[in-house]
Image (tube, rainbow, N blue to C red):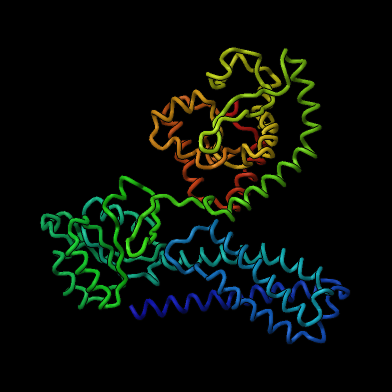
Length: 465
């Protein structure tokens, strides 16, 4: 355990040194390549500036701690945390330069340094994470763990760990009171009451307990033993197989409460950020692109068939509230518009409408819905009322998707679930991704979805008809 902890500290320190090298290299590269007009005031106080630059790095770690060495860290979270870190770092650095009475003269330098750091530092952090995972896949810096309970939960945990060695775990084996497993498991270590003796003779870092909660006495004894021997102890609740969600522990007085769903958009701050972006982005589109698109698309729509340019349809929004969703009309006027989805080679669709659907241009009027507050730029696609009524009965978690505003584009749409849903399984797949989005929302995830959607607009989508 001591050896493994030392490796953890060494890895953290190496990453920290690398961070400092990268930030200082970016600083000196910009300093040397930028016109002296923008850097002249730095020369007399260069030593103080470099000292403050490195001090700001350590102070920024207080707000955005380093997590690259942890067992589970996703790349998109690394980029997101890098953005937060660089923003705080540059903010502190700019304040320090202001106290040195050179901040006002270095505005251009600071902006360029900030933008360059965002890109390069994020790439550096991603590269470091890849290196750490590669290092662990080779068997280094691995934590020795044992699993208590060889039931379904224990075996599933074992399979997850063995599937990706980058987590940095070395499973020594299982302890279970079912002695029949001795002839089935290649790494069966003994009964639960033999754990203490085994741990005393082996270097164990962590214990993962997967036995049912009905064995509360055994679990309590194991927990006390682990704490006395400075071994980290983890409990996998037996009901997680039915929930399949990340759970958050909250405390009311001294009573622990488990909530089964994280919703970042429950935070007023996150909702404010998302709404501000929706207003700015939709307003920009409506002022620039939409007027010209409306004239061109509207002209072709009018020539292609009789009827209005815009198609309005009642759909379910936030908390199931009904609103009128706008689209460019892509079909001839028909009585099935509020009941039947568009299908491949749909006879109701006009040639102009087919092009608008294939390129997503038919969705542009929904920026009006975004500005009004009925929709967001990114979110689960709003469904027609008939579909909500139908699928809310057939799919258990269908209505959960209404806990967030519907969007013009969404995670389901860029991961293969755009357009017609011919089978119940397809709709379940869409709902599953909508719920995943609700539980994993971040501003950077929204930006990623928007970028992929724009790329797909130019590529065209096979499922859009």
